[in-house]
Image 1 (cartoon, helix red, strand yellow):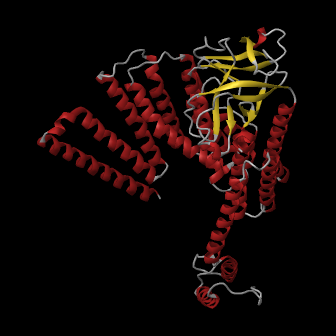
Image 2 (cartoon, chains in turn red, blue):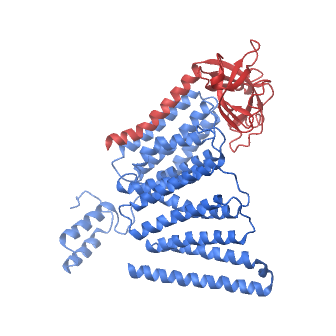
Image 3 (tube, each protein chain N blue to C red):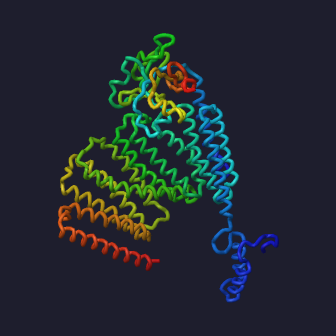
Length: 166
Length: 402
């Protein structure tokens, strides 16, 4: 009983610590890319505590043909110019991606490509100034070799949000 | 014997005098009198009230609340300035501290033990939210709730209070409901809304099956099993029966993947099997429960068998009403067999209200005239009178049985 009790109490903390370690690892290992974002009406009860946006993958029309759902889709990323945001240069089912060196894994939903990077938490004090996503906004994302991505920062005119708001 | 240094916490002399009197009249033995005296000396003042300094607790509580509010305000105001690692480390320190507090008092049943356990489990929500915020995680929310359900499941076993068990059950339904209505952001791809709804509808039956089957292990998850029975019973009757009526009245037939109806039926049969094999439940109660599950299953499934049911079809309304009556009558019968007067009151009240609703559905136009209103009033009074008589008879029957 005592071992069971100890395990029951330790399990949540161990799981949480493992989760944090995994996310930390994910944010450090991989390639950093910058992606343009655009605002849209989030219709979310918690809106104001985070920004929801649509990632601009360029002119390829990523997911536009998918009215409903399609999972395990990949977007191959390319940087047209050294300082410009990354854009999609290929889109399709992940098994067909070939030798794409840098890709995002996600799903199509209602014409949008979702890769789990469509949210950025902001301090409550910013919610008035950031009621809508500003022009020239972009996100910095870390992309692992398996296509998983994690948001690291939110930029306005290439300036990190924290610096910009100060 | 009470030590001389111990401060008496109640009218010790009066109790001793009474006990001596009762022992003298052979109402109690000397051992019983000593046991009562020992109990009262150690537990309270003999009147059922404890001598805890509630006023002091209140003042300390106000002070602590003010202090905590100040700290929270300070932290919130400087939230941006606090590095992520500081936030996470602080969280883990607090979480572990609460866990340590619970472990320290785990052998002593009481408020402190339960408060520590509840705080430990609920504070995990804070941790999950904080991690999502620090790492900017997106999603529908149900994976976060699922994570909480999984990591707290072993803890629920050790809870002797109701809070965590009921929170666990409610969270399971919230998570399942979000999953059922969310888009493709879930691991099981390609499921339509109907299929996901079928999985959602199967959850109460699965949980009931687990609760009933768990009766074989009475010391395991005692509070959770109670919570599962309460919430799922409420859901089946309080949500299942109106839902079934809506399905019968709904003239917009979906084109569902009918094979997914097998999912709630599998769960329903599992619940029936677990109820039939219940080790302690009397046979009539088992039969009523199984009949209730089967009736609900048939009542909810049949509308999908008929591809077209017109809303204005009187036959549809009659079937819907009959199904409703059958289920709530079974619920009332179960309450009587289980000697639960309050449950019987609720079931019979629902039935009475449904009769009134049907009356107004059928004779609603009469209510616009004076005579019609008088007749309606008389019908409602007659139903109320009949309901009261029925309740009285059941109460009498229950009192006789007891």
